[in-house]
Structures are given as C-alpha cells and as structure tokens.
Image (cartoon, rainbow, N blue to C red; front, side):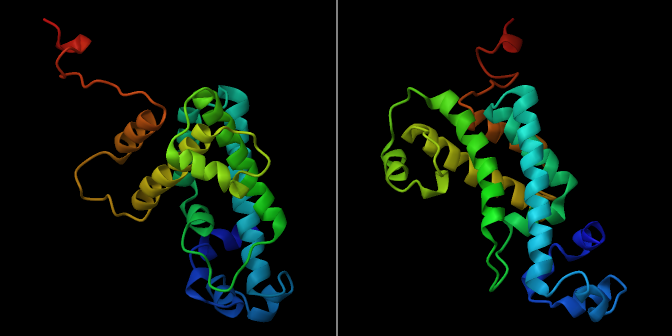
Length: 211
C-alpha cells in the first residue's frame, strides 16, 4: 500500500488534499484507504518515514563502502534524489501545512546529519573556527550529540543548504533549458565544498594546456 501510494501522493499532501482525494487518485474509496491509515497525517507520516529511512540507509551504505567523505555522500544524495524525486520533495520540499513529524522520523534524519558531520569533521578537524561556525557551535541542537568542531559544523550546514538548493532546482525543472549539464554543476559544487577545485583543461598552467 505504501509503495503504491508513494509515487502518487508524495507531492500532493502539501496542497492540503485529504485522504479521500488521495484515495480517488489511487482508484480506491476514502473508507477503503482509512482501513490502512487513520487520516491524512498518518499517511504522510508513513510516507515520510519510508523516504527518510530509504535515504538514511543509502547514505549509511555509502559511508560504509566508500568512507564518510563529502564527495561520496554528496553524489549518493543526488543519485537517490534522481531515483526518488517524489520522496525527495516529500521530505525536503515545502512543509505540509499543519503537519508535525513524530520524534522517530526526526531521529532518522539525525542519522543522516551525523554521517555528514563525521565527514566534515575529517576535513575540518583542525581548521580554525569561522565567525558563523562559532555561532553554530552556540546553537547546535540540530547537530544532536555530535562533537564536531565549529569549522565542521559550518561546512556541514553549507553542504546541506547548497546541495539541496541545487538538487531542488534541478528536480523541479528550473535548470532545464539553461544550456548546461546539471550533473557537472552539482559536481563543481561538491568539489568546492570538499575544498578542491579542478582546473579547466584549457586553463593557463593546467597539465593539458602545456605545450
């Protein structure tokens, strides 16, 4: 039932549609769907939980296989989002009016952030704190019990906002027709966040431009 509902309903609860409207789209009656879910919020909770669990498992598997490194995690996030655009927008799109996720869903999302913080702490373990990093260190509820230093908190927050910004634009179709490859744009942002910049093949001084 959840898998049947997910692709159809994921973007829709945000519009305020009730269970009856969702059931109709699935070819069911409202009372029939109520046998599975008590109401709109119960359905949304099940879909959100399923989406977060899928993403958290993907990120954890990537960290276990490739190590908790920023580039690997970033590309795992994009690959998952491209395979699951409805799920992505359900958890990272506009919040559903009047809906509040239960604590167990918050805990799953914290699993993802903890792995990201591990990666950023590896990069920024000895880096000096930025002013905003210090501010985050004083307001770190979002980081849970993670002991990441201020510089790692700053990088993690930058990772979260920039990459989700690029992904949201791409998945919503706002980059379509602009004439560039979204995958290369995303990769360039990842390189920047990871602290590495690849020279252009034609850039002065690059290996390929040497005579």
